[in-house]
Length: 220
Image (tube, rainbow, N blue to C red):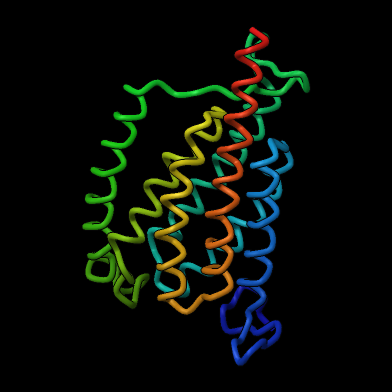
């Protein structure tokens, strides 16, 4: 049995074959996102397991931009873990961790513009991977532009999350909606269902972080 093969089936439910990769990747991702919404720093180390498993899964189902995204996530999970646990003295909350803050409108507009441009350029790149490197990418990228939107805007959302900005959750809502449709289309249904749940967790995360921010501003 090859644990890292999408063809290695853990169990079957309702005639859907569940691979080890999809099951444990989904489980670790769900735990990591829920802990993030709760401002729990353990979301970062658990997230390292999640992105490692999904890297192998997405390569095997030809979601190449998502595959590349997991490399970025691995690095930013390490960065986020450090950033949340090593804030500057004026950035600390009561737990001596990085406190919640908000991004300026100018920064949000800039990040949105960069996200749109990045989606277009990365989509064009992903659509040609099988032509440029056929020995590595034997099949064309599935849904290159939708997949690139998930990839690029996840980078934007992760950057904001590392800095503990409230708006990260609004970006995650948009990412999760597109990702839900994408993963169901590729028949990785458990991850698709997970991202549907992520939509609601992201909404909860926005509510909780915004509430935390309002409490901090009232104290100040």
